Image 1 (cartoon, rainbow, N blue to C red):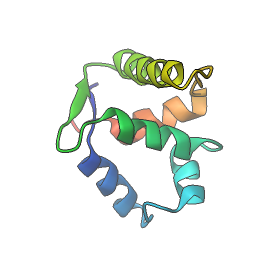
Image 2 (cartoon, one colour):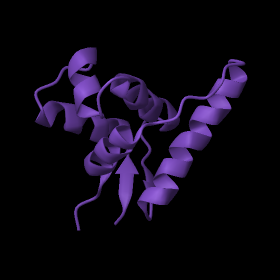
Image 3 (cartoon, rainbow, N blue to C red):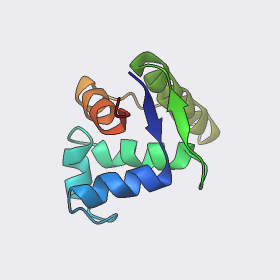
Length: 99
């Protein structure tokens, strides 16, 4: 299965659920529970405006998300966060491309 993310896709995901961009609680729930909003923000940050990032499989997607998190955490001199299984499951479901 292929996965992709763009600012446009993230807006469509929220819109389809009737969620506004600043509704942290609803975004938390949608993106896997506690800290889901953090991972939503990470996806937005890692994707250049007007571009689409895509991956051939879930493993590559999760590695790209973690690599981005590791790099930004290093810049901020903080330990990197790690998405939980619930975050990965929710992100995978949301970013999966239709066949």
